[in-house]
Length: 135
Length: 171
Image 1: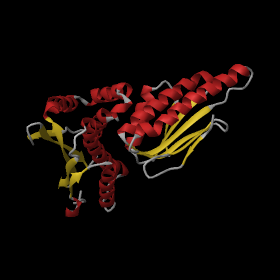
Image 2 (image 1 turned 135 degrees about the vertical axis):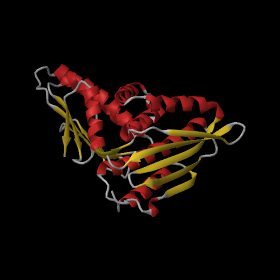
Image 3 (image 1 turned 180 degrees about the vertical axis):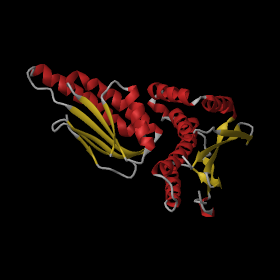
Image 4 (image 1 turned 90 degrees about the vertical axis):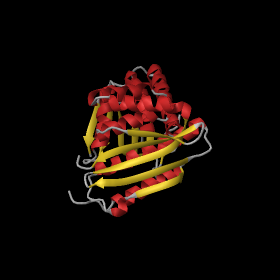
């Protein structure tokens, strides 16, 4: 599998999904014309990452499980993006089988109540350690 | 609060709506808000509400494959404490009842049930729907105020739907 590296654009966030260095970051604005089209490859990547970890730990049972931290720092999100981010988070939740520490870090600007609320809503809905942090 | 929205805050547009035009209108609003003493939260809420209402109209046209992709938008400040956003678009008469019921249902939700409904919709709504239901629910949660809706007959088969929402600037 390959890492996903997307630069920030006017309406889409910067994305880094790197299974080699265990860096998982989404940052910026998310208001694309077609949110599903933008997020579908990211959701698929999590599926592939899950298979990769399964293969890794099945073939190397003594391999140390690494901590997984996904960092979201979004400054504006449309409702269709929110739905897709929820779907992405649901996929991420499935990675719990392959790590002892899976954490979502939801960063929001200090004076952005709505982005904080989005993080808090997700934290109530998901069975994941969820840190909502004022950045 | 002083009159933070001068007369030039008034924004109106009538014409075709598509993704580019929607972004242009949101950018125009952002430009006008720059000079205002608003919190980041309120500023972003203004963008969000405008974008969601325009998206709703645009998605409706796509879903129903209607040839007239026109909307009418009026954004104004009736007094220093609030702004109103009105978006009108053509709908099929056959959809009038469903749209009316859906908006009235969302209007009827108390704040705590709004949150439950929002979470439920986030879980169950198909991604193909592009989040329309979530958009309206989140606008209600953000504004705390009701949608106003109005239907006017346009032709034998169509009505003009006008949705109006108000944002309190003193949050």
